[in-house]
Image 1 (cartoon, one colour):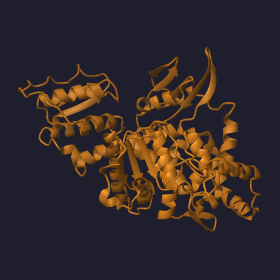
Image 2 (image 1 turned 90 degrees about the vertical axis):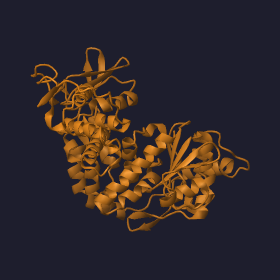
Image 3 (image 1 turned 180 degrees about the vertical axis):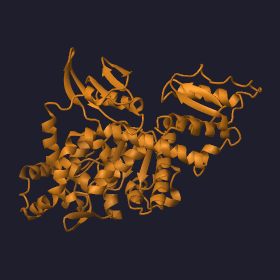
Image 4 (image 1 turned 45 degrees about the horizontal axis):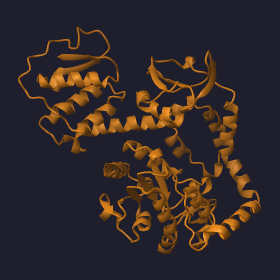
Length: 476
């Protein structure tokens, strides 16, 4: 048995060096082993056999990218799995394209788990304020499902640039101070503060935003797994909020409807007079466009919607994603893709290595079309006339943002962008020239993935969805 001793659990460079030496020396996967930490007589426990003269080899970039993800997984056999793939690539150069292969499928699943763990870390890290010798610092304790600290820390560096912070985990620690990101040794729970002064305010805010009429316990636990609750201050409120949900729902239904907001009505009237139907009006900024949409009367959908929901993202985003219309949660929040479909999109963008903050996300129709059904507002698909009426606003967003690639989610979005009805399944996944230097790429809407009852079919369609987003990134 040939044994390579690696410097750490995530020592990718050490693994790559040892794996390359193994393969050049003809060491089969059955005779190769990888160990973490000291204790060997050097890099290898046994002397390597003489290299047989095999020429230096190369592997697909897809394998290297996948290996960098898989090595962060906590599975003990991850090094062996990766070396087995490396060995097989010598005689099967297209192996990474065979997603049904047992080894490839196992590696892809572990990479997906790592990506999901990174996403959960972004969502569930909670900082608490402390005072140290140099002033105020924010410290968080987090226990990630996999070793994703170094992979995810740059996200917090970009998000909290002006804040001094530290994230402590059982695998290591990360700190941001004076414009430098540094990594340190593992930590324990007692090294992080258990509470701070603003925590009670946060819990009060969290409780006030809880809507019992829309409670779906299983969905909540799917998006917010119990393993993370012990480190979330708001989690202590969840059992009581759930227990009281039925009583609060009955009180909400019995309460009289509030009076219309007179100030909002006056504002909309002014915007309607000054902008929405002013002949020749062309918004010159995204903020001006957003204000004007609130007074839009181009179709009847404004009557039953809470507000118009315009796109959000960088002013000069290279990638624009167009959905169908705001959903129930988007209509209330005033932001696109913040509901269940938005969470599916966020996770898929993460797997496709696309930063949502670099994407302009919008909808073909700016008002929520629905019909009441008891306490719920059920989505209704906009018709061709409504999509055509709203296409003026979508074209205005395209003119201001000037994206290079536009991904359309579903048939309604494709109609809004292309101006014609399409069969998404027939035109999916290929770039369509839009005539202004941009290309459109059609795919399904994330909500479609949520409606697939069979788990295996849902997983397969989700992989296709991620592949479409990856292709959009390649078109850039």
